[in-house]
Figure 1 (tube, rainbow, N blue to C red):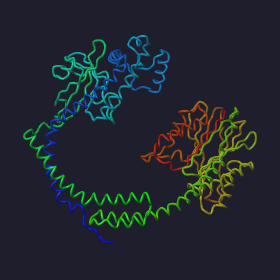
Figure 2: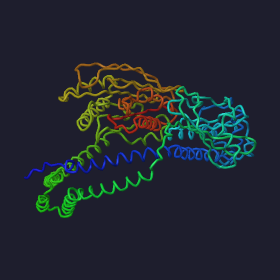
Figure 3: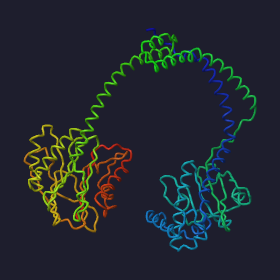
Figure 4: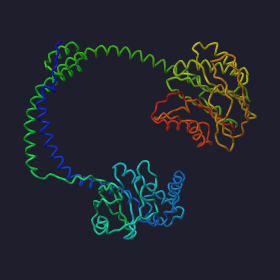
Length: 589
């Protein structure tokens, strides 16, 4: 095959260099001139749009004038941020009690019918709803500052809102806190004075360089009056730092534009001729041939056509590569079809394995619906199609119940097969009436006889005497259970750990007995819960698990498991689940 080594860049270099040299010089002059004139005007337009948007958010509240007076007079009494969850329920109750549509619709007259406590709650909630608007605008448009201020007199102003950047305190900001007045001289603020003297509804701007800035930077200040009822004078202030680009070039502007146009036209004609002959024509033919291939899939015919491209540059090599690619696509298509058939077969087998495993783990909890002495719920979510975690429970007789949870080493199909073997061994030992310790000891012996792959598992087993609440349990290297005593909170149970099953012969296991009181709950889980990680590789941990349990400690076992799973999902966000996640909760009523 003929080699095509010349490059388009080398062929077009003289024209490209000429064009870019002239264009860079002319455009540099034009851009420098236009930017120096338009920068401040563009910034003013952006700041005015921001101020108008924030003002619209404020004036949506019909009782804005009442709120401004309340925030000013009762700033020391307001509990910010306070208990947002409790306040939210109080706001909902306030709206329902007084049949208000929303906080926005409450009028100043209606606020007078509220109690002092309701007035405070209403004012706090409105303040907390408006505060993020200022912070959002400050961060979104990279403003130096944005504030809402009430003019008390010619020497003092009262700030109500101030944009907060990420990392700052949520209330107060860098310059002031709610309830502190700023020193103010209206004679030194020509922009503010002009705004209040003018009747025009627009933003007013001024440039300053005296904002207590050690680097003496220049700032553009924007002010917009906020109309309110009564005698209050208030306005929004936006501050943006600008660079000193006041130099402009005005001489020979029209001559430069004319020269630029003529030179660009001449260069364009030259470049277009070169582009057509060296690039467009060969490329168009290649595209046409590839389009024909997409329709006909006639590999032999299209390859012959591509060989007719005689461009002695990258496009010639592109034609050769396309020829090779089309030949490769034909081979790949045949291989892909074969792989799709094989993948479908594997997926079908995995789905069947997943259904078999799911059927082996108890999933029907309806037996506990009508019981007044017990409630139980469990869940198992494998990291892959099938997993190695499992839980199990069944009644040994009318007064005794067997409970177990385990975590097999590894994941996927090998772990699932080992899980099915060990689940049956544990259950068979339990049905023979053995104690938890004896169940573990004999199961370890049986597993070692069939464990040539040297897999192992951690297990927690227990037997509950229903009439007395006596729970006898044994632990083979498994996670510590969380116990909720009546009237208390979930805490980790410091039970005795034995060695994992499937590793050493002759291991003996000990058991412990606890008395479950009415209303007690015990929560057991695998390490997939506490070792779930987020994008920063931080683990979920037992502390977060206990916090989730205690948030719904009085709820049913199913609700407890749902809350823990929701907390894990919120923590890991988009991170992929890397381990099986299994939980079981028993409530002794």
